[in-house]
Length: 398
Image: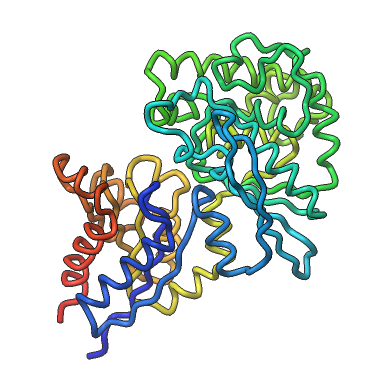
């Protein structure tokens, strides 16, 4: 009997392994444990860390190096991927280059102070390439300012110095502080701005940017509540400043500033990367699922159809994973082909009922006990390979 055709299609494992490194580790471990199988790799991204690297592997293109302000205003190296094709010139940028959590030491993480200004500078650099289509990957951020700093990085005036210093400074923002927003939005009308988000959560609420994600960026529960109020204040001020530019959709319900604010803040993906989805929507950006965008670029559906089993993975498989992350997307794409999908993650925090409902046939943790987490972080590739070897012998016995 011939071996199993296995497709390995993971995301990155946090800051421990890039998606390419995770793919290589899983492929090698599976081949060693089940040499009779045919194993191929397909690194993926949801818009977070590794977005540009993953796209370049398929699209090619030229990397343009730039230096921008990091989350704490320290210089950070970044890149713009420029691709020319039949549609013209497209520039791809990755928010994690400018605002990534990995750029901030653990003892300095404070989403009330970190700013997205550097992403604005990165987008400005993308414009200088002559691209008429700009794709921004969102995810893995250390920030929670709903894109207020991004506006400053793009040249929006900040006379009261309240926009570029993190979400904590937005508690007193007023519509007058955003009087240049309409002109800034107009300056982007000739650009097709696509926002590839890693999660489909709203800006505000229990699963929004502040309540759902600020704690993992270093916020205390009290700070998360303060950030929720600050982002609500900023969103209302921004909608008031844009006024008639936010023309109501006749099928979207009531008109007026309150209705417009609600539509923008409740839109899927508005809360991605600390609210950057909302901030880019203010500029006219179209928000799309990042995992789906990358999957289409790399031809994931055809690869799945040619396989008997798909192995995906990420650093932590939790409730966020079911809201636009790679693992859920891979399982969704595999279902029409009747190909089982399993996930191998650093930690699994989703119950069997939840991951089965998402279309997964199995979920395996590298560190399935709390006392194993430190060892997994100390040797991410080695511990992942050991776990994959055991999984391979389960799904493809000799």
